[in-house]
Length: 238
Image 1 (tube, rainbow, N blue to C red):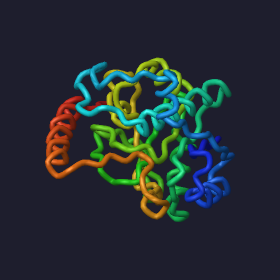
Image 2: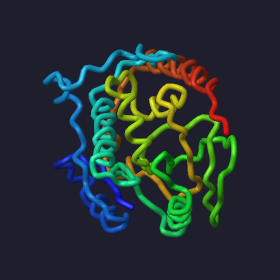
Image 3: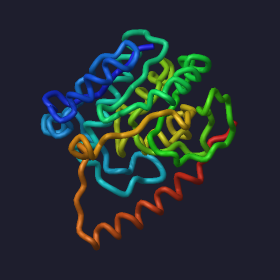
């Protein structure tokens, strides 16, 4: 298995963790993160404001979110171009627990195919529609609704091609788009527990920042709740 670590060039705060990941993950290499504001400034990406699919995404995309999406697309393109069966894609704030991580890797080795997309989330927030397999403490399952965040996932070659074809234009963050299995046609599986955690705060905070006052924060939370309810109506099934 190959591993791709998304990392912003020149980010010294995360350099030490990236070095650890390169030593820990199988056949690891760095993929330079895309700087969203630069791509948008030069016209290299013109995202649509949340209106491409239903439900509409209620917030404008930030440059950081654009860069994150394009960074993941770059990894999908690499998987297809290299003709790999699949690859592990991680962000540079990932940390792995050596006692749990091997169980997750065992499930991946046994069940991953080029058609699969398997999430390795840091947060345990997904309810299972069906369990596929278990090894040790790790359980591979089909979530009713795929969770958010993209700290780690294994993406097959056919899955990558499928996602590339459906993201030539983007209108929402990559993790919210991945939830929309009824749009991109890719089944999303999850492994939990998996040993993955995020070191975001310890490494200087998120690279995708959105600041807002108390009133706008409340408005955002209300809009977010409505949007999530609409997404939750589209559940995955065996």
